[in-house]
Length: 376
View (cartoon, rainbow, N blue to C red):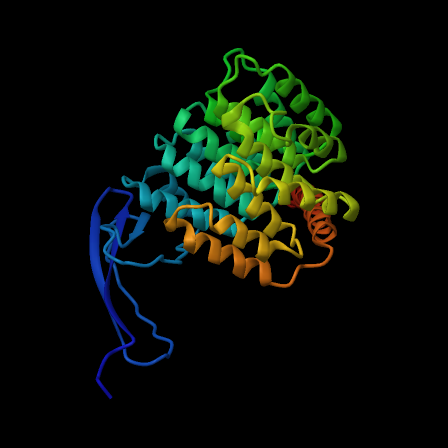
């Protein structure tokens, strides 16, 4: 009735051919209703196209989902002059997911100068979860040297539980002669803990036992890693550090509380009930940060008394935290998801099985392609 369209915008499309000649054309969209719209552009080139960029000047306020093909994407990932379009090309290549596409990603990353691109691509590879993507991500874990990119790449690697990534993370943690900076070591410890295993638990325990010269940031990372390990042994260690005065580093007590609550979610019902009682006592701790960590832990564990406990914490916190407390109350009233640990474990098992099947399929395809070439 008001004559307001659904959306209206101009999309710039830049095409570069093999002679480095560049053309820019504009396609306009003026959508009035929710219907499919198709637009076409024609470029006249004296040489084959080698790169295409959509919205090269970043005028659009939304993400573009366009795949112009493997060759153009591969060239754009390696040679686009701007960071956003290199990231966009990598995203589409990872979405394609074929060995050729991911090989192009790996090749472009080996020459990529921007840490922004490498950290974002690590996230895309982690989300893909296929076997070839995991191998490329493991290579990034081993080879990355930019201090600004280390922590994000380690964090992305921690989102996938895989033997290849575990080896890469263990190597990065134990082999290099120079120890990484605190933030990087903290992220590396947590990513490694998510891989699980007794060897990882032994490493975590040794690092915490010999943490005298360690920076608080790194120490908190190793403590958080114990919580991510989810084992009964790591829970027992954190349980011994939770009481007031047990943790010698005062500034790290909140990190201990968070890790304890995180680890408790994966323990048997009896241990969870004990954890709720302990966290209920910590909401009266002298440290505001510990009180807030305990309140979050009670909500995460779906404690029956979580709402009343939050009311008790509310009076001890600054006014600006009212929104945070109300958000926690809403979260506490939501129904609990039954057997969350079992569901997560089943997802991890299925992801591992999928990667194994992909490896077998890639080997069969390689043998088949070799035979076809020989017959020709």
